[in-house]
Length: 228
Image 1 (cartoon, rainbow, N blue to C red):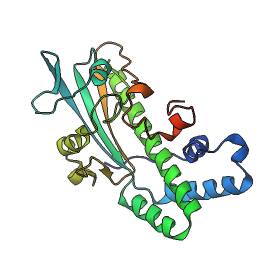
Image 2 (image 1 turned 30 degrees about the vertical axis):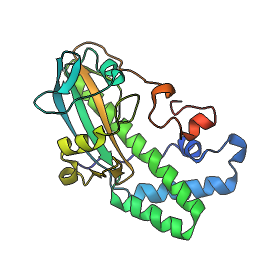
Image 3 (image 1 turned 60 degrees about the vertical axis):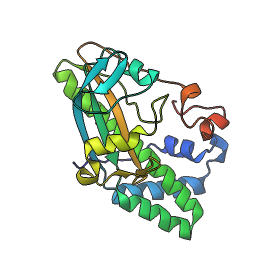
């Protein structure tokens, strides 16, 4: 289904994705970010698809019931502790965003970089917005949910990406696929697992030491984390 776009992007997050410190943000950069934010909000066509599936635990193995999909790793097991089911979700900004960024790269690298950062912020805002909608719905049903947990986070294998999009049938539902290297296409897309329980649950933040991209993470190199 079509996802609602926010009225505006979080500019502070855009600057963070750009790796800018406070003293690097001048009027010229503010103008570029402002213009790119408006443009990307105009052309983005975010779509979302999610399903709720029961969980099965058998001899320490965590599995999506009635499927062959196993959720491997101690972190996802801790994240879903106390949960009877989970929500598998996927959201994408659409192929036109990838195409627009490629076009910008051929014309102006600064604009392309800002576009890329704005797109990253937008997809994250929409994913969070969807999470909040799910939480509201589950609150009405007197249920609780964890935060989002994606393949590649903690010790949850990135290889799960392709299996998730296949189970969700995202190619047909929202035009989202995964390459043989488990890269989502369109690139500005997010898949996530959200635990559902009948009692309060908080899930698990795995931390940098278990993150799949810790060796190349630009935040870690700057002594920061992606969780602000």
